[in-house]
Length: 372
Image (cartoon, one colour):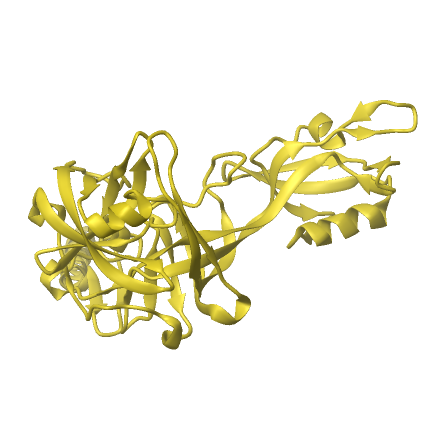
């Protein structure tokens, strides 16, 4: 009886002790849980799935407005269309279409070899000739495997699988801002989509270059204008690692090729932005960044990121005379109001070239892991 009572008391004390350890451990864990942030080095350490929030007055960025060339390389090979192959018998076939490959798919591997370029895929196909090839395909973030056999195209004297494909794209836009301490940059304010599939281009990597504007096509009602620019490999100043719905982002590798007419400035949350006068920084003449007058016509309250945060209107006489307003290539031009960066130009209205949309700067910063 006494032994049973002792055993019972031992169990009770053991239970109390375990509960004490669990409660103490939980309390200590909570005291140190959360996140740490080193603003000087722009380093985030996120724990327990908490999102870092930094007071907007502590964020300093340098707005640019520099014209840039952009070159992106796709993650895998993007399928943009089908191409029928004519055989000796006169039949027109597309082995890829028959195998179930769809427009918008990305070809990731062929016979377990990672595909890095159109040229590499062409070599793999022609080395295999008419032998079956196993493809790994990415479709809507899902891995799919298909098998198909190339056929010989008499006209081209080569084996083909019946696809139009793309491994890269290039264009001209505007650098929005960069952060000197972290050497990170953001540009465009909207995604780079594939021109054929109109879907977000999933990228492996890319580069940004300083660009020279060589001509301007004025915007008119029903026909958006365009800045035409050129750039070369030697003008590279940054590496792109993200293509998102809120722009492109990456790291600077050559500060000497970055343009800016402003020093470090604060940023405004959407609650601080007012309808009324503002400025944009953009480059339309030989790489010279200039400040132009605009009006923020409407502020759209947004609870989640989007590239149509504000409606803006160009009021600057010089800019209207030279471009007609907002033109293609000006995407990413930073907007300044009350000595703070508030956003960036993203779209032009087709029937009102003097008007367009802009994105809040906070949405662009969020893509860099900075929440204000």
